[in-house]
Length: 219
Image (cartoon, rainbow, N blue to C red; front, side, top):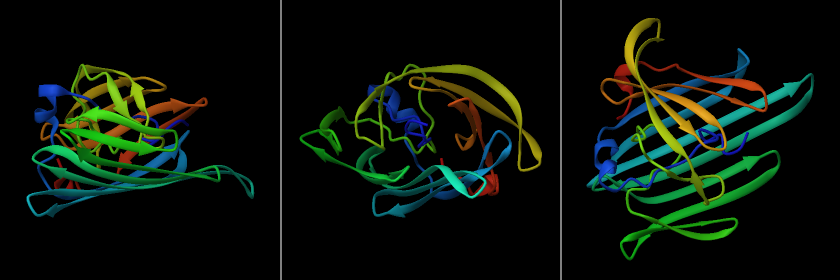
């Protein structure tokens, strides 16, 4: 499950589109994650005020067992700093099937320098990380892989508005499709809150279901 962060997805170079997707509110999200309908783990995002900006802490913990044997394990923690509506700093630590990787990003010279296991990459300001609590704009083409620090080429498409069930009630939500290494569908409510995700990896259907009240969600 490549970069399942969501866990298989990324971040976006956006130019002027970044402003419309920039985070603005503190809050907390907890998603219960299932694999083929069975418990798989959790993905948590906590966003807090940090001076003139925001700090987002993400944690992903996923595990699949066959009997007593663990056949897949992913643990990732990320800390993001947002200033003036753009990503100003990022640190991620990922443990995937026994291999640990580190990614660090910082603003430098009007760009975003990202250092990962394969070396450094430079992104324009406006790049989004793969925490997904910020809505990816349609038309975005480049992602930052928070597992490796490498750019990931994607196609982001707006599918349209749908009615979905969240927390036992039905709400209107916008469906966004991200096509790259995987194809993932993301849902955001009318306020921009991230409320769901589904994708298939290695033939396994992965689904995110919001476990916290929608009123607590950051946007």
